[in-house]
Amino acid sequence: MRQGVLISTTEHILSALVGMGVDNAIIEINSLELPILDGSGTPFVELIQQAGLRRQRAARTYLRMLRPLEVVDGGKRIAIYPDDCFRITTSIDFPHPLVGRQSLQIRLTPQAFAEEIAPARTFGFLDQLSQMKDMGLIRGGSLANALVFTRDSVMNSGGLRFADECCRHKVLDLIGDLALIGHPLRAHVVAERAGHAMHTALVLKLVRDRSLWELVMSEESPAETPAPLPSLALGHAASD
Image (cartoon, rainbow, N blue to C red; front, top):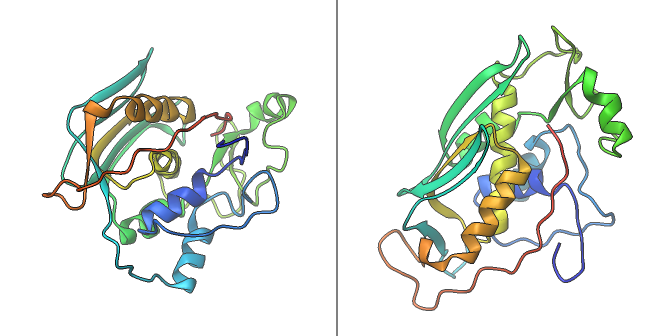
């Protein structure tokens, strides 16, 4: 939300833009939320590839971490550390025979994002559906736009796209939530059992503490006139 305008479920399209290296785009929307499509980032990636990218004259400004930052909530944790590229390490743990504990580390590039992260779909568990719908969530959810687990199997006819599809989708969401920072990152993000609430908590702490980071035109040279980070009012909806 910004200046009184609220748009929901932006994480998949923001993730696709960041993952594919797009930082200047106009998006027109006629609803309060982005379409879920098939529950992954692939439809957005394909549209970006079809449209093509244009290199601009303005230099890209990166946010480079200077000191670590960590958010902890019980057994959940998310942290961001200095690095020379954008790297993500994620782990999840769900008590399900097809999920369990999964972990993934990836260095973000357009090719890695398109092939390894974008296809992973949002997911849920059949025994939680009625409770989530009572909360007003996933009202448009179906097997066409989400991966649904029964107690011991997957309801979707095509099965899993990756053995660790759930972990990969968490990376997709994380990239999209971190896009709220407003600059591409030079940092290593480590998330353990974290979700949207912790992602946005990290963003808020980061943008409020200017001593943690610097804006650079490249990995070597600080930007001459760093732009301030945006003032954000962040909210989250439960999912995945």
